[in-house]
Image: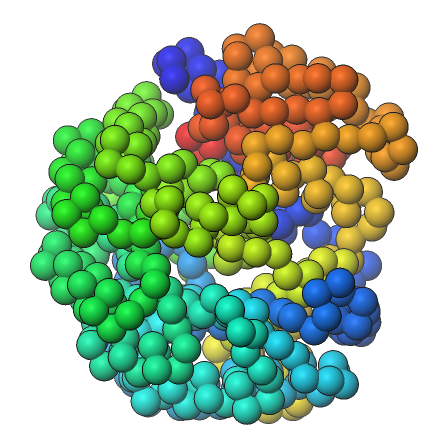
Length: 454
């Protein structure tokens, strides 16, 4: 990747965990009733029967990591655990009441915040409560995010006994200066301990998250972090660019100055070096920002063309319906999106009134559904195609025209009825998707809404 390409294509752009992206939701045309109707319709009509994905947001952390853009509540008061989990279970009951028949959970993920802030006993109460009114699919993917500093053997064993088979740990970087800048002091020994314990207990997939572009980070730090990662050989690695979005309300990205961040060219070099190091030790690049060993289910999903992308990131399979429980969680009925309120107090108040805690969302129109399909194809398989019968065929020349320069730079290949992202174009997947993003094209933002693409 040349410096010229970085300079040309390093612009602000979405990560496309949804389409339309959240800033372009039509909230004026949204209502809780419309959301419930789309939810019920998808559940009753999905070709996979009543299989759903379930995301549970657990927002509490004992300390603030200053690179984090997630919704979180910083506290050392663990008395918050029980009332919060009681609200989550009550929200789940409100959803299951709408369904009329028992849901089958094909995918469940605990995210945060820090899920391992909660005691193993409370997490067990949560999961048991979820499955009291739902079934678990025979080959369900059940996972959680663990903080290496506070994930205990008991956490891992209790959750494994409840059916969890995958865990991911936030590593970020092993250099102490970088860790200090992002307020995440985390020795390699802690990551080693919880990785080996997970394997000993029987987890089938262990993932590590590594970030490039952090404050004070250098290419030597990336090399050192990946060298240490090789010693543990996690099944999956998320190797992604730090999203610097300090303007978002409640964001903790104030622990360093913009001048402490690597330049775009330095980030490019970090990515290329890190990617090559990972490929050299047997990882395969999957979609955008992800790598997996050939023994991992995510790689197998790519080979069988079953990989999907949603608000949980890349997943092994597609479900039409994803329910998000907890503060700020986003649900996806395929026909619509709904996001929960963003504060713990507002969330618990809504639940206490026996109301779904939804405060905004979007119902997709026909064009949205077609564009969403193309963006998902590009994000998951680096290729999309269209037929002469597609609704938005008149938009294709405009999309292709925007991508001609990328074709001239040998980043993509354009045919009469499709586009393929070439190996050289992998770092620019988001840029290609932006050409298909008709809402973005029609209403370019006047202020920066998204992180930089590189």
